[in-house]
Amino acid sequence: MATTASAGVYDFWFTRLQYESGNWDVDQRMPSNIIDTLLQYTTLRVDPEEKVIPLADPRMLTAPFVYIAGNKLVEFTPDERRNFEAYVRNGGFVFADDCNHDIDGLFAKSFERQMESIFGSESLKKLPKTHAVYSSFFSFDGPPANSIELNGWGDDLVHDYLKGIEINGRLGLLYSNKDYGCEWDYDWRNKRFNAEDNTKFAVNIVVYALTA
Image (tube, rainbow, N blue to C red; front, side, top):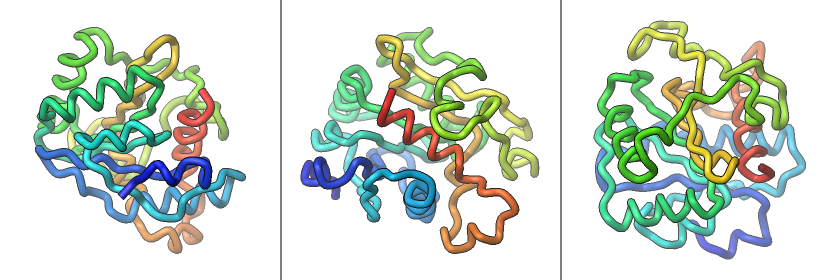
């Protein structure tokens, strides 16, 4: 479990949020893959172990970055809602990924309802392709497409956007319907067989979270 002991020892530790509704424990190999990517390309001191912490636990408020994903219903408890709002409003960074790759799926609809309830109906907006997250480390001309989209999974659309919630000009929530979690859910040792490393965008997300 994540603890404040990670602060000062590491610059970054991957924290996955456990929530009571839905299924939070998807794409289980993805975190180790992203940790390997950060070690390859950056000089960050990266904790080699994924941390899993309940959203209702106040310890999640100390994490520099949190990940929330699933493909089923998202309905926060009062404690989960309170921590989520406090975390985002006070400088935290959430990467939320829809494992359905489906804007009409249960995760997308229920998660977006939660965000509207907490932050307001107009808070979740499409990010312009010039947003700093696309140039924080590597340069992208928008969110990179992935094989899940190109193979027609989910809603059979290639989403050319990500969404986000900004607090005081800083992105506090990055929200994806592209299912990056499943795209990156493979053993990190197999990355060498890819013609192009498809996890590079994860570096941008983390570097933005730590520096913006």
